[in-house]
Length: 466
Length: 65
Image 1 (tube, helix red, strand yellow):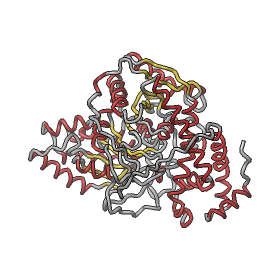
Image 2 (spheres, rainbow over the protein chains, first blue to last red):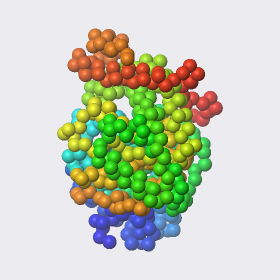
Image 3 (cartoon, chains in turn orange, blue):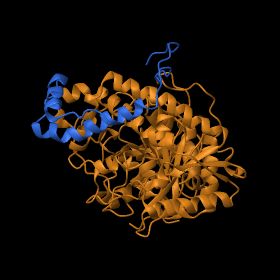
Image 4 (cartoon, rainbow over the protein chains, first blue to last red):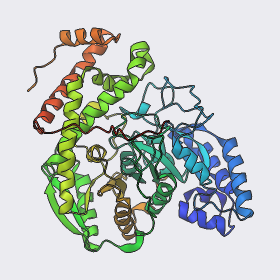
């Protein structure tokens, strides 16, 4: 295989090739670095490229594998991280002038775990500033572009992760998700991204946006690759106050078990059936995905979407209040350091009262109970991942985005595991994602349904022409 | 419907919050602040007196960072 083809492999394929000695970790890394050099000046997915470190780690992995020390499927695999994961001695900017020169003195727990799994760190990826707002036009680093069409947004806030994966600049990535920030860029860039259950993956060392809604999770080009990354980063961490001390299953163990008889809840009534901001082409693609799930043996059950619809309001209130609380001192001292988009939206949190915040937390209790009650009638929820395909930078209106339904927010509020995977392309050749969510700590179910759908379709094989 | 926050009232709120924002910025903030207030009103509709907030505090956690 020519070295230039290597970055297009999946993690599973690359891991297999490494063990068959078809290529080495250094060659995989070199191929990714060359591709970053030749393409990323158009995409801007990387803020920092750690080329020397990557080549050094690749060489170490090569020696270890040669000596018979095999750390598992991520050993020698080049990855990249959203730039809010603390990396010891490596600039961690959150895509903001506020932290432009910050070099953490510690690694995030997930970074430590990926290091222990033998991954190779290619660098740090662009995002929405502090994981909030929209693409930053006035941040110190350029906004990330969508590899499917550079004039379009890649979605966020884990924009660089989505774009770098779609462009085959890395094999896997970690994003973070407070209202959809893993699933939206995964949908918009035609890759796979998973928000695990709240508490499944440590948030220690991940710069917070909203403590009670933030989730760390994997992004990759296939469901199985996502499962491999999740396996490496999941588990109890006493350093994270929200970490759940629950057993970690083998996330790949049920991938091939099929979905016969799985009850698929579609919360369409009173939510996205009313055409309030949901793109008709997205709906058609979603309906086709449902037909595929039915053809694979699933049973589709229509359910009332009202609790999901209201969940967004609670999510936004909690998120804005917590985000402002985290940044309050910085806003009082130097508001000009924040970009205009994040500044305007985060400042709304300054004017919510303690009673407003508690009201949202009380609504969270009610909506959580209402949404989880559906699990007596269905096994999973399925929705489109985003209400419309990625918009053009030129015509995008962040204020209008607030008025559309959010299919991702309810699963941050409830903490349920949810994935986005490719389920179609629009007539303009832009990706559309399918979201699958399940009961708490049932990532195995999410992955099984996603894997079964993925293997029955060809959408995950489509790649942007660059 | 919430009583709408006026520009004059928001300017006072900004002063009290310790923020230093330009008049133009305060004006731009106004629609979002009113939207947030209306959202909270809608959320009040779904709760009853017996509902407690979903907080994450657990007294049993003793390990330190």
